[in-house]
Amino acid sequence: MVGGISIMTLDTVRKTFTDWAPVYDATHSWSLPLRRTARLALGVQRGERILDLGCGTGLNLPHLRKLVGKEGLVIGADLTPAMLDMARRRIAQHAWENVEAREADAAHLPFADASFDRAICSYSLNIIPDYVRGIEEVKRVLVPGGRFVSLEMRSSLHALPGFLQFLPHICGVEMSHQSLDEIRRAFGEVQVHHYLLGLVFIAVATREAAPLA
Image 1 (tube, rainbow, N blue to C red):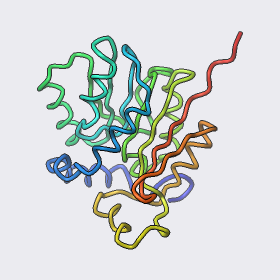
Image 2 (cartoon, rainbow, N blue to C red; image 1 turned 90 degrees about the vertical axis):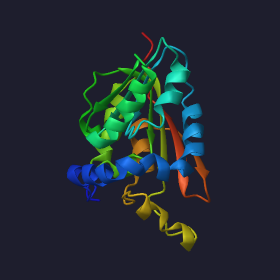
Image 3 (cartoon, rainbow, N blue to C red; image 1 turned 30 degrees about the vertical axis):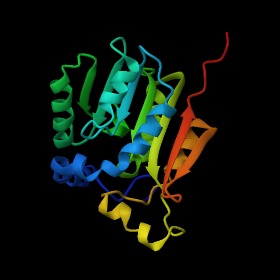
Image 4 (cartoon, rainbow, N blue to C red; image 1 turned 135 degrees about the vertical axis):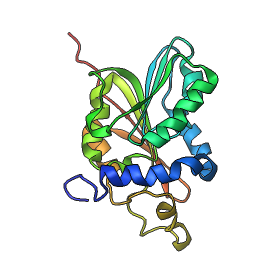
């Protein structure tokens, strides 16, 4: 990682997750409990607009849609068309009219400022090549007072038991990022909760509210 840009490239990410797409759900059941914890940390209200950044095959989408109800909007954004194909099949299967899956580079999100009330990123920041810009983009598209929840693996694994250190490699992620530091830099105060012997953390950040007139 150099200057906030990973040694992984957009093409590398696309290729890796194109290969993963057909088996991703079957091989990532281990991630489901903490995904639920992260979704609850969003504090979603009915009718809100939610961004699921790095949505992959759409594992979060049904649950986020349930939280916002028919009045809200859920948009999943991902870089890899093969993963988005899986997410769109999930959406079509349930005929959800207020859930979308869009191809997007996290460093250049195709959304206007203040488009979303909440944003969530599950095991994705560590594979965003320009993750610093990605975090800034999340902040940009959130409304003032909007909440961002990041569920991630630690960027430094040297303190973990040896039998855990291989997990990021089989999950296909780049662990050189200091994403938590960058979330703090962008958002200020961040609540952090650690899980699985410190391997995983959930960070909860809030975009500063607009100043009173």
